Amino acid sequence: MTTRVTVKGERPYDVVVGKHLLGELPAMIGEGVRRVLVMHPASLEATGEAIREDLLAQGYEAFACELPDAEEQKTAQVAAFCWGVLGQADFTRSDAIVSVGGGATTDLAGFVAATWLRGITVVHVPTTLLAMVDAAVGGKTGINTAEGKNLVGSFHPPAGVLCDLAALESLDRWDLVAGMAEVVKTGFIADPEILRLVERHADSFLNWKGPDAAPETWDVLAELVTRSVTVKAHVVGEDLKEAGLREILNYGHTFGHAVELAERYQWRHGAAVAVGMVFVAELSRLAGKLDDDVVDRHRAILTSLGLPTSYRGDRWEELLAAMRRDKKSRGDLLRFVVLDDVARPVRLEGPDPALLAAAYAEVSKEPPAGNETRVSLG
Ligand SMILES: NC(=O)c1ccc[n+]([C@@H]2O[C@H](COP(=O)([O-])OP(=O)(O)OC[C@H]3O[C@@H](n4cnc5c(N)ncnc54)[C@H](O)[C@@H]3O)[C@@H](O)[C@H]2O)c1
Ligand SMILES: O=C(O)C(=O)C[C@@H](O)[C@H](O)[C@H](O)COP(=O)(O)O
Ligand SMILES: [Zn+2]
Image: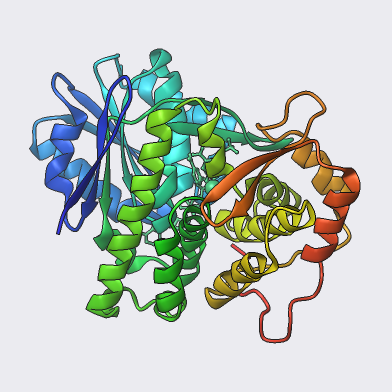
């Protein structure tokens, strides 16, 4: 079954969820486009080339640009290389980019599209769960700098997003569960049914069998993608530039991004967000907002997916310094998205440093035997 979620905005666009959707690509690219650059990481060369050939057959001048893998592509150097490719191929404002890859690729390609000639069309074809449920939707684009995660970027919504679930067949199980971290985030901030579905089916995700996964697992995956996209579409449709509501999508990211930087991007984003959610759930509890059972539920769900719930205890100063550069900060004021309850996100501004240190102490406790993470390392 194919589902279509429309994202409101100056230029509304569709996120299509289903299987074997490439026939939809020309309509998403839109009228009057002559040249298309397909951007993909080296690991997806075959998929990228198949899409390029398909576009050639449809009459486009189609080019390909191979990128480094994972977080290594989110740099100013790689963006500059892509600008060179666009320049050499004479890309104009009526031409387009198609990104094919995970969230790192949709972030980089979105950034290149946003900056080339001050903005050209981009269509995302996300190939990881994380990119389908989160990164490809909403127009946040970005690259990292030495000082931190996504510190340079812009808001540049795509013209369309094709979530072809068939791409998930080849996904490594640790990348699948890393994507589940953002799904779980969406459950905690907005849609409790997501949490119930993950609780019931965590085992089939942790033991992901790709093409051999049971039909029921595929059905649940499709429902989780659609539910997550629906929440994200609603939020970014109301608040594209993160003036308020959109901050809820950053649940768990203040600490999570600090961990990614401290680990030199050797942790998967989803794994860092998992630990970040435990940190901020503990902070919510210590601030008197969240009951113990909801904090425990964070640990239980994330553990059932093989995601980490704890982080080493000797890096507080470094993590705090990175958190100060979070995009939610205002001057010296640290700001967090915390929970009052499931699906009730609120802001916590300028918390007492002792509270932050206490939340860190909780997250740096050893996990009980058997709950050690298996997914964090890239
Ligand atoms: N812009 C946003 O709103 C937003 C939201 C969430 C995350 N992000 C960003 O997304 C990134 C994380 O995304 P990710 O988890 O997809 O990581 P990723 O893009 O690094 O992909 C993870 C790995 O999966 C491989 N891969 C991709 N598709 C595959 C497939 N179909 N089969 C087999 N392997 C495949 C990639 O080559 C890579 O090694 C981070 O940089 C994060 O900051 C952005
Ligand atoms: O779309 C958003 O807004 C989010 O915050 C989604 C996050 O999952 C995502 O990781 C995002 O890139 C983080 O944004 P940042 O502004 O904190 O860099
Ligand atoms: Zn994220």
